[in-house]
Image (cartoon, rainbow, N blue to C red):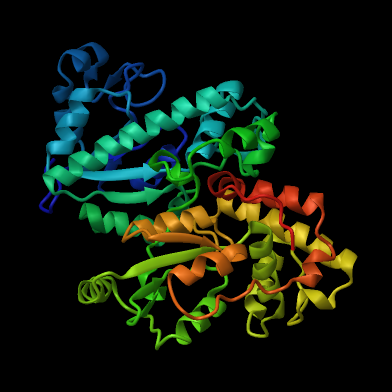
Length: 457
């Protein structure tokens, strides 16, 4: 049944264990909307065990998939289905070209989807309606199998993106983390052009594996080692940590000499701003359009950013949250979500060494969990690789410097004396192999990508 809006039908472009069953349940909860499952799955039709849909048997579907597509389109005011990379290629090509087809692209952290797939395969439980019936398993993480999963995911999304780019179309993106947000789901309803709205997300399905990913596999240490070996700038694993914006408004420009400082949150921002101020009048807050104009007016400009050792960066992030008198709400959130009890408005140096060390280790564990599971980790402790990848969405820096070698590297970019790294005696007093190992686990990709050694104070 054709609608009167921009679209006649929809397709959910997704993969296994990305939350597509839950998204389907929410779509079906909208009046006038029908999602017919994996209608073009080669092994069944719609849902497991079915061999016929809307009067169309599988044999007819294989010979003429457009007969089933026509039946789906006629089944409701706004009807659609889920389509994965290994479903009927004829239908995928048709839907990508058809402007009357609304494209919904559902994504999930590929590590989470891979581990979830291994668990579902081991338990045979692909949906969960009652949490009391949850089946559990701790499968082994297979590095080669995960890389293949990653490659398939990357190739599929590259195909989707390229097809939409060359045809000038736009899809509605939905991340796994968005599925519990009723505002996003109702935004999807608006995108489809239907009047119905949800009061709350569907309760038809329960989350099957809510634990941190390191607790879901039998060999977490091997998994971490395998992940460290992956290229953090590979677009195929960018979903392992959410994409970040270029943050151009935070970039600091200096007219003479023409310099652009691209600060990494949690880095030596204040010291570098002072270094720029010693040579002129730095300013920030430029939009992307203003930054492009500034670059055209300042030929020969140079841009740079500065990396801080992960241990020092984690320490600074924790100390800032603990000491800032205006960060009470943030401290309360960290306590409520993660059980992290922070001193109220006092710096870490005020704590006894044993309490300081324990708090830092607890915080690093929170950061590891945040990077693995949060929709958008706090920029102060997100990986520096993800921050730089965000910069590159507008323009990458010319130079990537290190805080501990600014004295040797910064003179190439200006005449003012380079700032020295701030001493951290309270960290040096407690730093030990356990803290270093925890930091290497939380920020494994930064250690691998940028070659950091142990922090030396």
